[in-house]
Image (cartoon, rainbow, N blue to C red; front, side):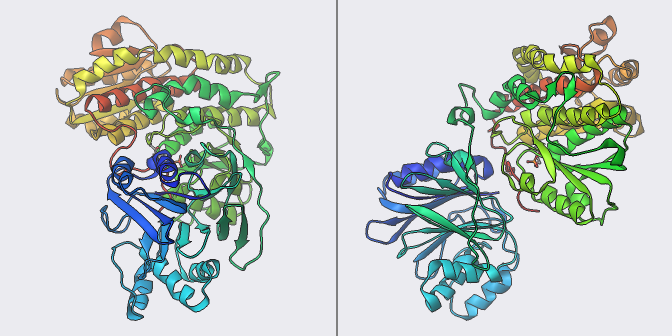
Length: 601
Ligand code: F6R
């Protein structure tokens, strides 16, 4: 939930670290801090409550110079967001500085122990204990890496850590459960939570695995496991460009990412359909599969629900969908022969990773649908496919959602082709989907006008049926997370079993109402709302007199086949949530209380 960057080299260090933090701000933005070993060999530090700009303004006047530094953007877990709890944290003598992402589970017992030994704590965080523990061992051995190794053997919980000591010309980095990468440059080295932080400087990246510790100097690095065994790690060449992670003239990353969907879907499909056959790097034989379980969190869980609909329809294989956070804790009945698909944009979600490990330990075959290349989940699955959607920076997931649905459809078709030829019409529809999305995006201005009418609403209901019910869930999630308006997604037919009691002129209802087998039923549900004075916004591909009469606002989307309806119908709902939140003047890319990747349970 927090972002880390560290640098060893000869560039001007403060602007470099601040720029890196800005690229990581999506990981946390309630406070930030920086610490550099200055030219006098002292630790010089600044911390601020608030975003990176607050830190930048404060640190500017200090004119800190040095060659080694670490910085952090925080998303609070222990201790309120304030300057004292902001990272870096220090030992008693202010010789050691640490930045930490994760949770130290045994921090309170360690803190008590260290206090008894005379250590003085200043913050309420779990992280500060790490600095004091290293201080204790450094006093014995005088070697930073050795001291960190000893501390890591005692610490329970998760960490991505970067540590400096004023007398040592290096950064020590370590990870367990929280992502950390090493950036390899020419005469300079980096450590960071994620690639965008260092992409301005290098494209060569090493992904640390759990229980690995790296010693980073200006001229190189070495990586060991906790037993001190040297590890030879692959250096990845990152293909993303810095342009891809900037806003390209859009007001927000979220809007840019909504508009990137035609390209993102093209990339998700690229090279995967040839001669009417699906080619994926997934090793699955439909005959051997007893059942498929899909597990994920949040938006990725919604795409899983869509996937269930067409995987069952296309392959005849039963599919269950489970929240990863529930799956991991209920001792799930998983048997060898089961296939578990884990879906994660970031590839770092703690609950999804734990669900993966649980399923693996029970003998299931694990398939991943992941966006971030080299992420922890992508490295632990048996096989999988990358979305190739490009970096998603806006906290509210958009392009990853539609690409996940595309990937699930490809998997369903791949399983089907082992038994019979594929439906060429569906394949052709997939090819022209990017154009259809482009068409749907043209409604953006019209949707903004509709959003203007509803921006003071306090509640919303989103209704859909069948394969479009998860779209209603996703539409409601988008609205609530960025506009802070309460919104509920519901299967339209369930409305009369309770939620209809809520309907009056103050309860706008968004209907996902494409012309499919459920269309007439959906129109009846609209009649029920209309009779109770509810205001209706309908997303549809139909243009008949009935829907125009029933809905106060009709947003048209292009016609697509049933399997692709959830993708095309999501576009106006993403735009509606975006425009409404923007009209309310909210920080769309960094909604309060949320972080892009949820690496704690
Ligand atoms: C909502 C959103 C979250 C994520 C969820 C899982 O817009 O982004 O609900 O979908 O935290 O994240 P990933 O897909 O990275 O595992």
